[in-house]
Length: 221
Image (cartoon, rainbow, N blue to C red; front, side, top):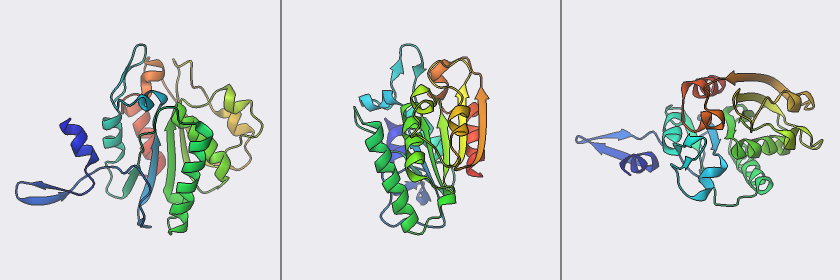
């Protein structure tokens, strides 16, 4: 509970008589974005929609959403946007929402090259559809355990921009995104990282170095 309070603090922490900035996240795009900052969207997996930020899956283990947020937000020039989606969120509808949020940032003066949309599993599916909607060659995307037949076999889904794909070799849900990239002419840069933790889909349930480090490198940190 105490960790959650720290993660969700958006103001200032008063410690030992002094004031220090809190590394944190926001759930929605700020009304007055700072164009000098980088913006990272983190779109969580479907299990978090059940309401619990720290659920345990019977096969994939413990999902530590607060710790993932904390690790991703730990950069002074980065704004992490990470909404807790409600149960039953429709992928296509939410992708439109994310696209609207991106357009709001761009209209406020944030460069597209400074915006990254990352997503895991269902969140990765949302990220893929967002990329397909936006067709912006300057945006950055990170698809984690997200590619499957649904995206690869749909001729209308074509992604654009700088794309990083990360997948776990023991995972049977998300696999390589190469087939998706091959049919997407507006992709300006593509990198794929295979990880092998042995944790199947649960490899992305905690902020382990295997996927955190490639993601942060993609941000240019």
